[in-house]
Image 1 (tube, rainbow, N blue to C red):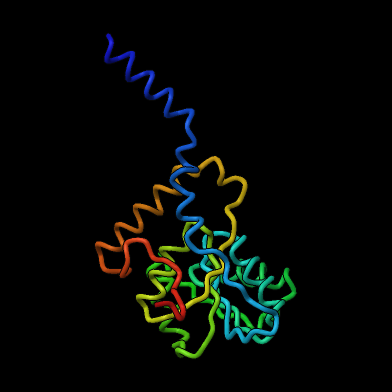
Image 2: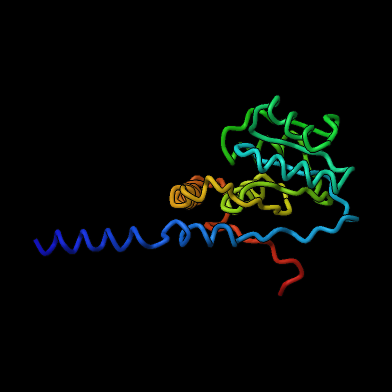
Length: 193
């Protein structure tokens, strides 16, 4: 009886704690948005599919960098074109990689499609919590990217625990499979000691 009461009390206490927020915070804080200046040379902007906000953010960024190519990976081509056009970005600037079904494929298929040179500047747009795993995959594919994380939609606030667990499990799984080189990828240190 005491064990049952203790279990109920523990479950009740845990249900009151913001477990999802505690788990998701390190993921979302890992990659702050890069400091980009309007005159900076940006070769392209890559949006990972799975959320319209990512494609919209890439299109808005493309308006600031009118010479940058816009690439959407792992998303429906018709939907991608519609979102980009809605933001006033020419379809001529858009490249769609429609075959990727996961983050690893987003990175490897996009790297094969674009064949980036080390001197190029590419911006990666995905959700804050997804950025560590996404950057890790792009690095593994030999593709250096600048992080441009987007906030999670308000509807996702109810699912922070599931989103966080998915990302932490994804990081572990990808590390074990050799799809990323670090357990918790971090921003690159430039000119550090």
